Image 1 (cartoon, helix red, strand yellow):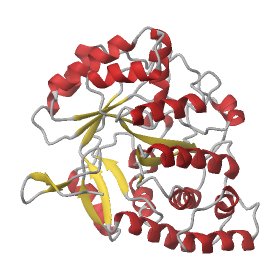
Image 2 (image 1 turned 45 degrees about the vertical axis):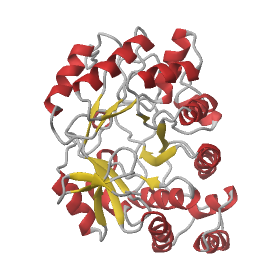
Image 3 (image 1 turned 120 degrees about the vertical axis):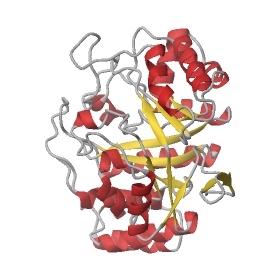
Image 4 (image 1 turned 30 degrees about the vertical axis):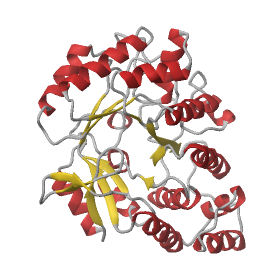
Length: 379
């Protein structure tokens, strides 16, 4: 189990902290040094200063729900607690009609985003997913569709024998408006061979997101941390994302995802401490100086840690969720039936000393409750 990182000396992390305090871009060595920082209040202050420069006192949330079409998957990721074989106990394979039944309760409701990700089903092709997008958009025309990880897109493209550009263009034509950041895990090849040996590689993940950005599809990015990786692996991951963001500007948010140890085959006992989670948020905010939003995904962190992360650089807490995702509950998360009301989300934010702002998927509008309309720039 990885619990903390102290390979750098105090002089190393103090020098890195001083550079961060000046708003200067951090190197790989300086990012690694900050993971050894023993002064957690200092990291909090640095990350908070940076997030205030970018987003002021705003903390963003939205009204959203998830659809997970299947947990049947061709990949064999040893950290995954979600995957099942077709027909096995606990597996599901929703048809498009099944998915429409999940969507219909939201017709006419003030929900602004549906998040669609699932396993990489061996028998479903890009035409199935294009039809799924079209059906969801017809059912919920007012809702933005954020769908499919790069891993799912890679399989669709390879199955069709198409380029990433052709595949993403078809999906966009049928309703895809944004992409989540899942499947990134850790980019380092050595770690990836241990975690997810048959999964889409780092270069392909980055290429798919670059292609999406070129096509005008905004995306997010993630990092799975707290398993077998080192500080160097984390920093390498962040710098590859920073480099692509310098090139395209297409990432809206970065989401650090904590490894959950239950019900999987990785063999890592226990999980990283809350202190390490908060340290990681701060370092991510300081190193990723060009991705505007850092999300504390509460179904994974839990509500209390999510709230604490707002003091370590996070400015987004995701959304209402409405008990519509199983990915983390199947891995033993405390939030077994994740749902929060708008009032509850806003209370967590205000109690942390920030201003809650309801956003749309693209962070380009604030919901004005008094007017009942979108207005202004949200960040």
